[in-house]
Length: 127
Image (cartoon, rainbow, N blue to C red; front, top):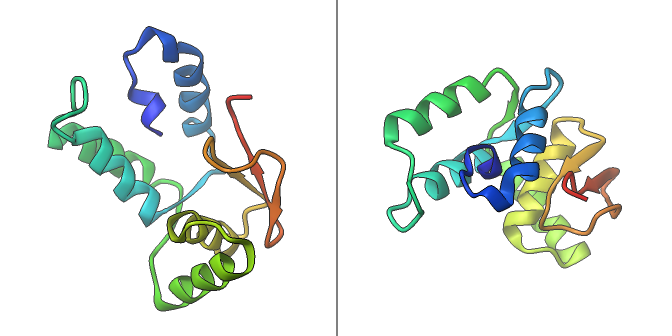
């Protein structure tokens, strides 16, 4: 999601791919991913941080996707995934959210491309 707002010329291809993914109608997100976007997009140390209103506008637009809330059940699932597969808690929570949403694929640049976890395949969209 952050690549969709990048102004760095080196990120041009990733920006295009991120925008294309965000333009799809069949996407799904977790509240955690939305939170992480907001924090990173508006942080003062970011080159050209987004104003609060702009970031909120994007988040609002992205709620057209199915959004998985953070629940006690999701927390429990994330902890189980962490114990079983050794991911960080945060990555485990994203996987748990994808599973709860019924996703077959999870787009992530930070996890192992092609790995299947809990019936969810991790796909690096920038490969």
